[in-house]
Amino acid sequence: MLRNIVVIDEEKCDGCGLCVKACAEGAIQIINGKAKLVSETYCDGLGACLGHCPRGAITIEQRQVAAFDEKAAHEHVNRLKAASEKPFSGCPGMKMMQRKPRGTAVGTGDSEIPSQLGQWPMQLKLLSPTAPYFAQADLMLVADCVPFAMGDFHPSLLKGHTIAVGCPKLDDRQYYVEKVSQILRLNDIRSLTVVRMEVPCCSGLTQIARTAVADSGKAMPFEEITISLNGQIIQRKTHPA
Image (cartoon, rainbow, N blue to C red; front, side, top):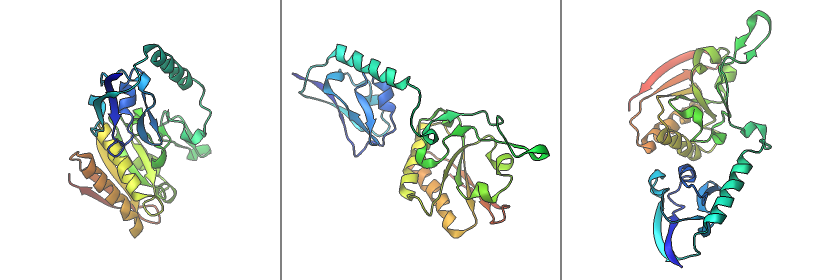
């Protein structure tokens, strides 16, 4: 039959998932990092998802497609709900969690230092841009060598922050730019701090932050903190918006 149907431009789609939440029929899902219309029979063509896409990747067009099946869509939503309620069985390192920062102590005896980590995961590659711990967050982009070099990283810098950890030398910089840009664009981030090592290659983390801020469209200054190889803060610098 001739009717309205959702069309998704994969070139524009950044996989943020906001359209998935907006679709009551479950017709859209994130597959391989892109939003996909999983079945034409699940899409009612009303376009409730349009206003939720920050990239303008969703449009409505009229064409010959299968009729909307309300019953099948309802059953599909129930299956999705049942699947989401199953106990997590994947890699524990990818399970999203919010933690009480002072709930764990590191060390023994009189030298115990409470952990200030308030989330899981922390690796930038594994973070979801729509994770709840990004709401009103003070975001800290941290080079992965920093916590090893700096003995008092938890009480001195980590406390009160949501973190994203990565290596600008060994990892895909463009992927990091896109992920950080998504996080900034989709959340009301209160502040951004970059914590890097003094080695030259680590300056790439600052460039990632600078490009991501520009790409996000938000005028946001950020602080750059440089750590020496012996674990000391040797420089603090503010980058203007």
